[in-house]
Image (cartoon, rainbow, N blue to C red):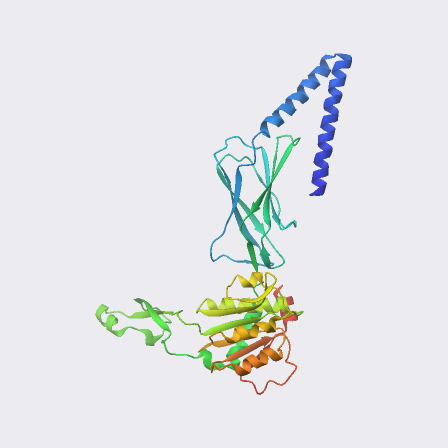
Length: 374
């Protein structure tokens, strides 16, 4: 960026130098060649000024993003911005560059549009952000120029919407955790009843459909086999995912593992979410998915345990992701009155005896798994 600006200023200085030199030559020697050069350079300057005349002030910017669309760190994602002018401007810029600026860092690349004639214009970027977070100070950098690259205008359009970048999705670690849950509590995944499901549709039988779901009454009337389709009701949360955001070297890896498991569970059922950590410089609990992007490590997360005890965990299986099994967390597990399963997922073995606790310990080799995932 700096090199480009230096070259542009150097080009402008050279043009001004030769333009003044042409005038000096024409006035001093009064030759046709000198006046022809003056007219030619003056025409170039006039054309440049005409093309750069339209103002960039009435332009506005908006991020177009679907409600369920999530951007994840380290993965390419598409950003669509909508440039809007107050009124249609049919005067075009021969060269218009648009760059994206993530909080003052050169995260984006430039896209050239030639020319811009419409009142609204969609700008597309493929972006890769290597660090999750809530990016609030973002902008589009607009650079308009003339056909010869002599004059350039700049405008910075601030984006009012925050861009949330979620933790990396770790499929390998997610599968490892779910497999260990099945081994430790196989009864949770062997439910044969349909009490948590509601009838969605009745359709013709297909090879591989469960025989117990055949609707024999309708099949007898239609003289063909028909089966019932069910979908799981999401009225009650059967799982509660808790992230204990204690500052630790494995913090980001464990947060990614928690996000991956939560995303898998909530696709099939309603899942309660509790993210304990620092949000906007305050220790608090977030119950929203957006908290995965906003949360920061905290050294005083144990002070949130009393608030966590007030939560309702009736008939919910607890998945607690924690960098280390602290004494405060042990007391919470001990006092938990529910009779459902409790899974403690952490990157290292607890430093004290947990055999007396009614919970299952799942340890993760985050270093090797993260290396394999990349």
